[in-house]
Amino acid sequence: MLKRAAVLMLSLSITACANLSTQSLFSHYSASNAQVHQALQQGNYTEAVEALPDAPAGDILDGMERGRVNFVAGQYPDSFAALQRADMAVKEQQRQAVIQLSEGLNQAGALLTNDNMITYQPADYELGFMHLYLALNYIQQKDLEGALVEVRRANLVQEAARKLREAELGQAAQEAQRKGMNQNLGAVLARYPDAGEKLANVQNGYLFYLSGILYEADGDLNSAYIDYKRALAVAPNNMYIANTVLRLATQMQMTEDLTRLQARYGTYAPAKAGEGRVVILDEQGVVLARDGWRLPLWLQDSRGDGAIYNLSLPYYRNSSRPPMSTLVLDDEPVNGSELANVDNMARNSLNEELPVIVVRQALRVLAKDEVRKSAAKNGNELGNALANIFNTLTEQPDTRSWQSLPSSISMYHTDLQAGTHKLSWSGQSLDIKVAAGRTTMVWVSRQGNKLSWWSVLLGES
Image (tube, rainbow, N blue to C red):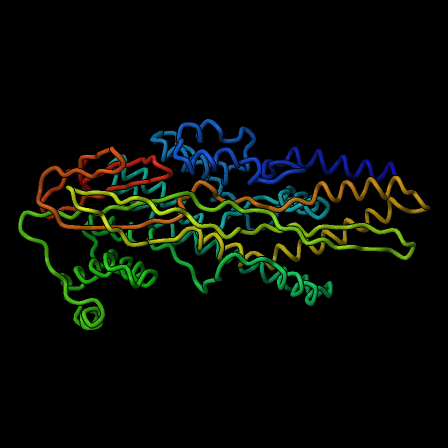
């Protein structure tokens, strides 16, 4: 029996090493990615690129991380290629309507090791950001049509992912009921350290507003107006978005909308002759990385043999980010307003996944205990001890998430006379070209006391 237990443990270890989705059988993603995350927080972009782990976390997550890190480092061809690889992997994953044999093996391995054995499925908000950064790559290349394709695809991909996740949640609920674990599930969730408020619906205002900018630059005012309004629904107190919606409602003579908008936000003041619009999208900080939380459980059999098991769950610590100093445009402060909070998106996504994660954890505890009981038969104390050690070491939280995203995004817009203007921050400056009746988009990403930025006059080839 001891030999059988040892063979089983060795087999699972080999399976884990062969699985591209797991960082390690005895570790977790946040631990292996800590150097990258810290370098990015400090604004050391080149160091963050060099610190990216050699062992991939699977084509999807690895591609997204490399895409974002290379983008802020100004290595745009590498960023674009990495994000395209992630996009192709997502397409393949969502095409697989039937679970393949390899995925079945992953699930079986996860039942006796940890959730890192399961192929990584990106959260809905991560898929939105994947297409957003593909769009930003196209904008940086001055390819408006390519960027428009990405924002059109973003909503479709997120909707497909949402349906898959809802189906997974339903299956988990049925399994919990079948195993009689409903009450235990509630007890675990009651003790779980929820690190933030759960929002009923989290939408990406950054993606909506960027989409609106691109549609408007392309002359599609109807589509632009729809997405601007979606952005306003997400951030109703953002006066820059409200001003944008008012401007288009006035231009398109949306009488009914104007009445409601003006009652809350006032009237739109049109730009002066010879002025162009400048929109600044200001990414700040780095999104929180998932941490691990453990709930110890003691299980004992009829012979008195027992073991301590840990429910290892991912969670987000409460954390605050120091405020950034203000950008300056032509000697005037840029007082931006929040467009999206990625930390909140990440927390909400994990809260939605949690019931499924806890069900898998509970099933794993039962399966591991069966292995331990088999190893401990006939008084085999060594087998019992080895099984306990294996169970403890392999129970790792699944902390995989896109950890190079910004913590939050603010926006600002203003109308300026045609010509060249200067944006400044922390002793650095960027020239901005403005044309009458046109929109200039400025992308900024700031971490620590470092930044990456560029500007594009939209529609200019």
